Length: 102
Image 1 (spheres, rainbow, N blue to C red):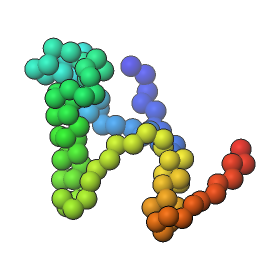
Image 2: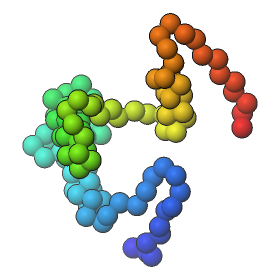
Image 3: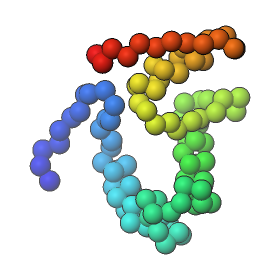
Image 4: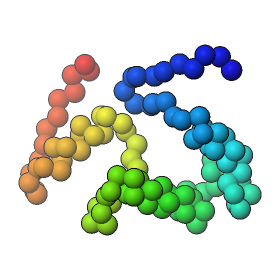
């Protein structure tokens, strides 16, 4: 393996070697399932168990109470920018967006 490169860009970040090794070990087969997380249905009980454990771990690490929910969303920063006005906009209102391409 070559020299470790550090990524300070927005988005993906460097993970500890131990995290990468655990992911590598469990990628071929999720313990007790016989298939990888990449192969099982996202509606299956094993996948639900993985997601629920991840949510519980995040709540514990960040000290988030049960009155909040953890959501895994796709879309990155663009989705986050879109969600802010939708969450603060009063009910029954409409919003206009201008897509400038920039």
